[in-house]
Length: 344
Image 1 (cartoon, rainbow, N blue to C red):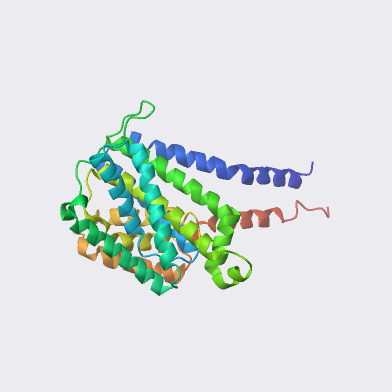
Image 2: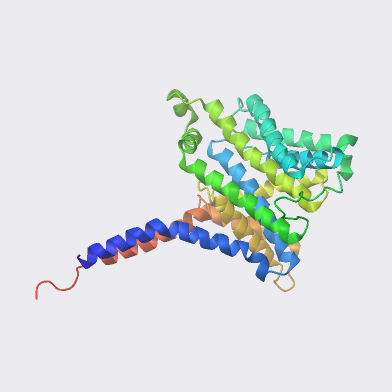
């Protein structure tokens, strides 16, 4: 066999197996984090990153269909309050309550979407923001929801398959499993016909509608799926903290979600991961700068956001995901060079 043909076969095989191998290695490293990270401070950072990935991934799925909701924090709160009420008031099983938290968030999204998705662009965004504000007002007003003090003594997950929960390490592993499941579902959707249709709707809804696509059905479905995972993240968050208050689900959460989504890149399914990891790393690293004033943190984040939007309109994911292409291009260029001197 000619050396060039042999080299092509090896490289083709490597490209085929490289992604699963890299994915498995990354997952193993993630599961090993508690073994070499003993600090509770860093474990809490990792946990916050994992549930934020779930939130941003759900937001990004809806955004791919052109649904710019300004209420992901509301569905995050619906999931948190659903779990808190079921396990404290009714003493229900944690796992069943968590599933219901996702279902309730998705059902709420279906109702709100059916009513508000008739509005377009900024009108829909403002309407969802108003919905989120009304929810916070309800949670702050009625005694059933604990008013401003919220709900306390939210229990840890029930023992399952002999696994006990309650420690920081157990919450890390639970958050990791939930985040991995979320990203697997999002990746599967992205590669499916459903995901392709969502992207078409996001590009031109009128053209998709004229092609026979039920735009409303697809949009509501994407909205519900994203809110389902927001509800699951909220349920985890409530149990992890052990208490929740209405102020936890205010406008600041929305700002973080938008920041992570835009910087990571809304055109890539892995954009939420890049955005959360990079921005959390930056904000954590800033605290180690001598004489660092936390007041300038938002200014630094704002500058980073402007630079990314100017240099990488599609987010950091457009840069990171193009790196393998550079190597392939350099490799193919090398392969196309003449194999020795044939004239002699």
